[in-house]
Length: 417
Image (cartoon, rainbow, N blue to C red; front, side, top):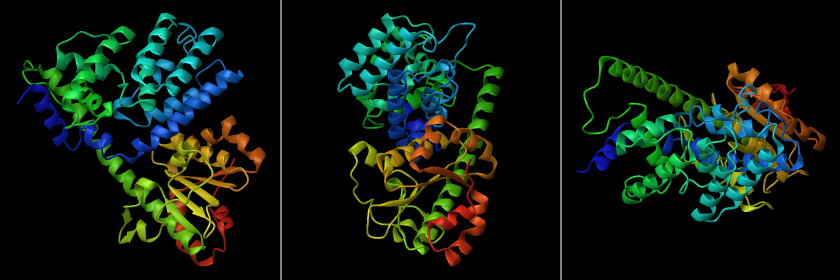
């Protein structure tokens, strides 16, 4: 058995590996692709219209990067290279208009790219502009646009790559990134039947190697300090996995309450397309929901995004959405807001009520995001985004089912800004 094959088997067999906790079992991973794609479109439009601003904070780019870092694990720290550091003048895409325009054109060209050659050409053009501080951290954005062509890039992935291939590639260099990418593509092609065409699976292996989660065969004996560091890392990962499992159970419970209420109020109800096999206790979602979201007069990508919203209530027998709910776990608020905004924009004459359903201790974070200009702008068309705490939904679910007449009853437990 060769080294890479043996590592892949170890990687896949570990229930707490990136492969098992993020790549194959995390429903939010699939939802993130369309939300981030929509977010990149917003960045491009803001740069075109001159509304992008001169700081990372509160920009549409911050929403994209926060949606990416919500993925945890492989994308921890993905936002850091994009923070505006005035003393260092990096990354120089906020106050330098030419660089800002170049960055926007790069994103648009990559978004529209149909093949590998087009993407590589755009990367080389961007590299030639030598925009200060704008390095291959951008690859983490491109991964969500082209997951079979662009691997993500961070310190742990570089360290894992160097450990596996006995190389010395550097962080922060497009040249190093492109050399790594060639090797990753070639190696993944050889082993993709064991992993995936999606480069996130192989990148997760490199991440686990770089973080010390798994060790390449033939590694020299570790020092006590290195062993202790790895033990701390494993303990932290274990705690995160347990926390994510608890959050997933809570998420499913809240979806069930929303489906139950909507059904009792006489609406047709639909849960996210990839959640229809779920159940809360003895209550299978497939017995509550329509078998599929009715077709709508929107483009394919928008329809795919809408179909991933956690819970929708529709007027019985129609495709008119009455209410839409995104149930947020501890770190998924950004992509949820993007999906709800997509729905509101696509159905301006029908939809009026959007809800974020959140953990009780996340109110401050939710209010901060709902204050964003893009969200506040929805009010001009009569659309308001409200939020409901998990505890209130759980406590009042049965009473709402018993006494509620229509969706307006949700205002009794909802808040807005």
